[in-house]
Image (cartoon, rainbow, N blue to C red):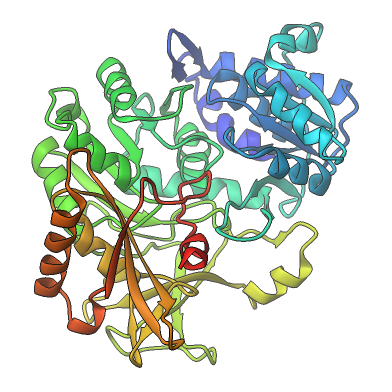
Length: 499
């Protein structure tokens, strides 16, 4: 088998080679075009000396080159690794050294980042900038017999973002690729020729699994945008390309509501909106559906799972809840002793079992052994399940806060704070006071024009009216921005260190 054939093969075999596979600005490629370009990339990589099962690093913006290079590497039996285009030089240096990659394809405007990574003292593989791609591909045939891969051979890696420590390379195999079709077909309703757009970039598992893998496998059309997403760019792309399905994150949905663009005619043409990446507050979900007239589905997946494992569906959805385990995933809540929690509304560590789980962290057997046990993966998330079977995130396992002997979910506090008019962002953390006791602190970002002392009073009064008293922060502190990783995850440890 070969993962690239699993992705492009169904459309080509069905005679749909002339269907658009992707649109990016003024450029578009049919499935036949994409297959030929992927073959050229695969042949060029082999000619450059990349060995079977050796990683190829792709520091590229979303576009035809990234998709074709990704599929071409996989088709040739190599291992594509898409990297975050906003990563730091030290993280690129780590990826180069950790992966043992022989080749790095890099955007022209990121070539300096590669030089900085090399200056750190780590080995950086041969670099090919986008301005050199014509020469790199010159003479490469647009036909390539797919490498015959075993199901458990490496198909792709993804580097975790995490909130602490160095990124880890999560290894995925060819056998996992076919699963990508199920969610986009069964729950998102994608059919051949339908258009799908993700504001999140393809180096994230969320769009990689459900767009590059899942949507292409069903014959849909990917809408790509090279730039980093913001409210105006998203509106422009949606207005021009009219996708049926849009994937985004709560922060951008909130921004588009604030900017007054969600009620536009183009947005009303979107059938299904999907939210992942962080908890989607119930009120935000309701407001979005009211404004757009579409349905909003929420879900959770991860770099380690490639695809969503808990999600709402058009047949079963509840604003404020993440959803229920999807048919291809098993989920359990366990206490710190590893015992399964059956009681409703009792938080526990979320464990997942599904066929597409990563097989290991490259070069990290210690961490792999800690989180992968008997086919189950400890996600690091804390969830609760109600009596009706709805699963709701409570935060990360290392983020839960014990205040006066009672556990507090930061997600619950943050959701309440974000509903306060004038609050642009909010994060709750536990910080020791002068006596060493943990007290709840809310870090907030005020919207432009807000007077912080007045907003603080509004926050305190609102939270006291909505939350149990032990869940109300003792202190509210204002920041210009909340510290986050390049993938948008909150770096709570920095807030705890700041005190």
